[in-house]
Amino acid sequence: MSDDAALTLRATGGRAPDVFRPGGWVPMREYRDDEAVDFVIVGTGAGGGTLACKLAEHGFSVVALDAGPYWRPLEDFASDEAHQAKLYWSDERIVDGDNPLQLGSNNSGRSVGGSTVHFAMVSLRFRPEWFKARTKLGYGADWPVDWREIWTYYREVEQALKISGPINYPWGPHRPRYPYRAHELNGPALVLARGAEALGIDWSPTPIATLSAPRGLAHPCVYRGMCVIGCSTNAKQSVLVTWLPRALATGAEIRDLAMVGRIEHDAAGRATGVAYHRAGRWRFQRARNVVVAGYAIETPRLLLNSATDRFPDGLANSSGLVGRNLTVQSNQAVWGIVQEEVRPYKGPPSLALTEHWNYTDTGKDFFGGYCYMSQGLLPMVAGGLQAKRGLWGQRLLDAMENYNHQVGLKIVGECLPQERNCVTLSDERDALGLRIPRVTYSYCDNDKRLIAHALVFMRRALAAAGGRDIWDETDDTAHMHGTARMGDDSATSVVNGDCRSWDIPNLWICDGSVFPTVGGVNPSLTIQALACRTADRIKALAARGEL
Ligand SMILES: Cc1cc2nc3c(=O)[nH]c(=O)nc-3n(C[C@H](O)[C@H](O)[C@H](O)COP(=O)(O)OP(=O)(O)OC[C@H]3O[C@@H](n4cnc5c(N)ncnc54)[C@H](O)[C@@H]3O)c2cc1C
Ligand code: SF4
Image (cartoon, rainbow, N blue to C red; front, side, top):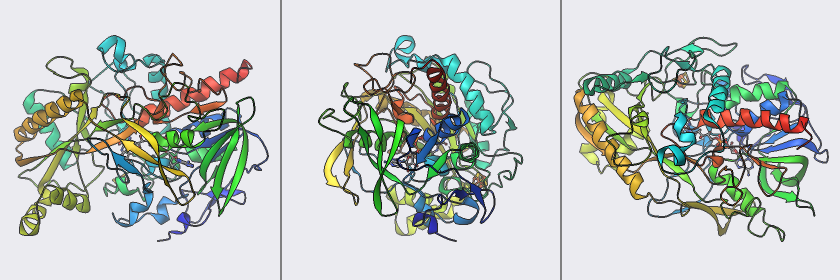
């Protein structure tokens, strides 16, 4: 195993790693720092990586910078939970509020390819009504986009990632067949199905971004279960192995280990490029447009850290909303033991789910929805969970003896946007001298009611499936969004429906930060769909001379 990528530039000298061939390279176009490219993109994850590909394919010159390494999954990824912590963004951050968030492994990645390198691959569409949550459902905020348009882009993304899914999906408007067949259910997924059927609700195999058949040089999933520590077979369809090879092939440049510290602007208030740190020194990439796609913490951090005399509260912040409305998803679980051996480490963690409570509006004492999924887990996580629950010594050993019989049901629950939940700058600085973020989070009463409802319901479902010794995991969260929300009004949003900032016309934001609400499903399919749409909108604006 080589860790060189964390220390040594790999995308340089006119070539980038060929992620499909050990030791291989692909040619990469390179731009000079003083050459003003059409777009410089900060971050190459679900938002930035997708956008880099699509903009390059539309003929724009693109440089995409990522603070993380350029991994070769076939060579660099070990089947070892501790070793793979190298994928997470684990720089110091301050957390507070009533419910301080656990950051690091379960919340953001630092890699070329972003958090998708270690995400769990669940690829779900938003319920149509969520795009008009305020008008149609009475909570949160409306999105400035039409659901039908996003659903068209979902199709493009599902094809690009060859999502494996069922022939008929039980909820929402009809959708075309998924490109690849659904995966066989693993042990925990069979338990979820049994419980749902016992309670009389629908369930489904999970639409998921890992291959169920070969694709080019990538093999189908072999069910080793290492997905959330990085897939070493390339079955996982992360941004690293999907959009980015396409981006390189059409002339985009990707710079690894390149941390952007500031966005600069000219006297007229237009962005001129970004100052970034790479290979031991600060440099400046000129650009006609700047896109920020650093995830819901680093995006507002960069905008706030770029404050100037003209924009003393940070860039794109005339609304005062940069960093505000940080929204997570609740990620509580119930765990229990079943009679049969389920081996919870086998296969992707969540191979079955139910969206029953996303599409049912009666029988709830809360706004929003949640899905719940079968949950597998690796041994270190299992041990940590039991210890967090208070087990220690012989009781912990006894619980771990049952590891092969342990099953979880876990929610992805909608939390409501609240301005008090936010990313701000602390006075402390990191090794590069950049102020570090303070992340403040508290659940509201609605969030607590949703969680309570889900725990009661999942307990019933697990018991109905034959589960015993059931206990609750009460304090987990996942996925962050909302800190640069999109909207129709410059007073109440940071960007418009094209992800273009209201204040600086050549500054764009393209990642989970722009979500006004989060729904009860995992976000990355929507982030990628929005990125595809943004690229098409930029192409249309350019054609009309409106960039
Ligand atoms: C453990 C885990 C499991 C998940 N499972 C799922 C799932 O099953 N389904 C799903 O839909 N979603 C899942 N997610 C969430 C999903 O991965 C994220 O929502 C998505 O990747 C966010 O996209 P993004 O573009 O906003 O940011 P990211 O994909 O995180 O990309 C941001 C990139 O920007 C870079 N960056 C940030 N700041 C700077 C800077 N200043 N200079 C240079 N580079 C910078 C970072 O290094 C990073 O690579 C999971 C996340 C985690 C952590
Ligand atoms: S289970 Fe499949 S997607 Fe997950 S790490 Fe193994 S091969 Fe990759």
